[in-house]
Length: 285
Image 1: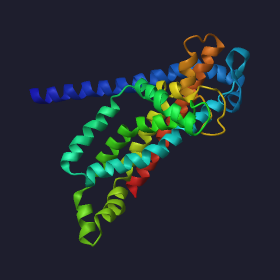
Image 2: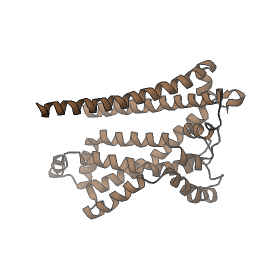
Image 3: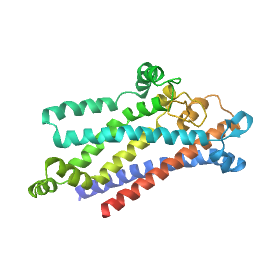
Image 4: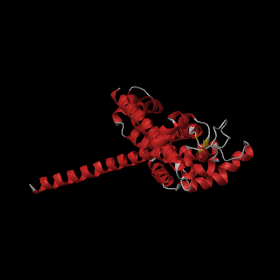
């Protein structure tokens, strides 16, 4: 009886903690929407989402340059991170000797613990001058932010993708090789398709990290509220827009920044919903 009561108490405590986390997320969402939605409705959602001019003190509330810049930088980071991350995950889980894997894996975990401001300093001291000297432009650009973000999200992508590949039952690979497949054919033809749900989750989480990153992006992207015409142009993302101006904003300006947070929140929710649907459909197949 005592054991059952103890288990029931533990279950209730865990349920309370889980509901507390959900309630906290709900309160944050409600606060952001209450602060940002009224001004968005007052000036019109179209002027916020499709407007080209961001000058809140003069009545300009256009977020389109920041929205497009966020999308461009995030997709660019994924172009860099996904091939490198998947290749590293495959190497660690299926190819690397145990000694090598045990050496590389802690290094990747250490990379995940490096503060984003350090990546920003590396971008300013190395990436930005290289772009300026060899490709042209100011150096502080979309390309610099893309490279830095692509490196920053690698640990997340590698760790989760490696776990997904290792979770595939070993008989899948053994059966494929017994039928005459080579090692690489078994990996790319059997293991990766079987782990596609976990790999997709890794990519989505990496995208979430890239969308939400602020400090490193502020340091290397140039922070110009314009639509970039090339990778060498400066830009400004949604997160950097909030971080740069929230410290001195007041009145409608502050509410407009909360409206920026609403757009970012909805963007991330849509991204997560699409990812969840894809994972569910992949599992059904």
